[in-house]
Image (cartoon, rainbow, N blue to C red; front, side, top):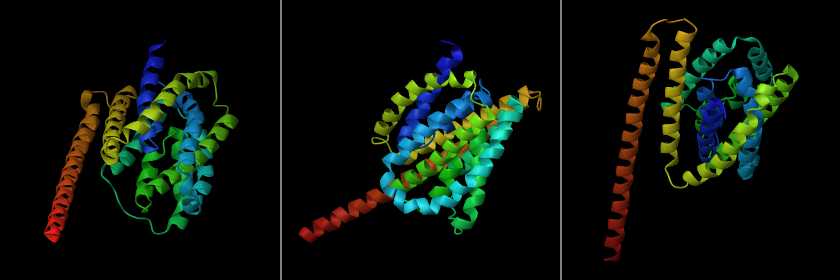
Length: 299
């Protein structure tokens, strides 16, 4: 097997485990790594049909929550189409190196927002939904990634776990289906892209059930946070590498981006784990007090 095929199989296996655990994350893990050796216009058309199947699976598993969320999510879905059309045009026209660079630049702030645990509920869901959908559609059709901004937005809207996953599946099934149609009409489904699909599918079939098993035995928030850190470091490395490849920075100073992101993420990781430890101590204290009160009542 070509070296890139082995690498792609390993990357997509890890990404499928994340997707099986969280309900999203397949593209967020795969794309930043695979773009190190594949162009967007080759990788994206291979990813989108697989994303259609994955998102349909997520929506089916969480279909019980669909009646509660679909009306709230419709403005976003309706806004997807113009963004997808524009993004598909960009993929077909922009130089692969620059497209990789712009992809990483778009992803980094979104990933860091997730890492920071940004919370600010949007009150005007209906009015902002169309604009958000347009931006999301363009981001997805250019990168096949929409998990970071969607997770930030939906986490701020007070959705229950199954509602969150149903909303993710609903929106991402719509965007991946629309993007597949747009790619078809733009002629982006080439032999070089299609040949990648059988290299990815076995990893998906193996990884998703593993992820579903893993998440039942680890703390979901910790697992999610570690995955976000991994994404941030990979994207920062991609930016640093492309700064040199595109001759925007010709010295090792290009890797200051990676160093800066590593420091920022390390600080946020320390804060995250400190917060978790404090919460655990508070919960343990409350449980101990309740137990003590129960014993006093019995006596």
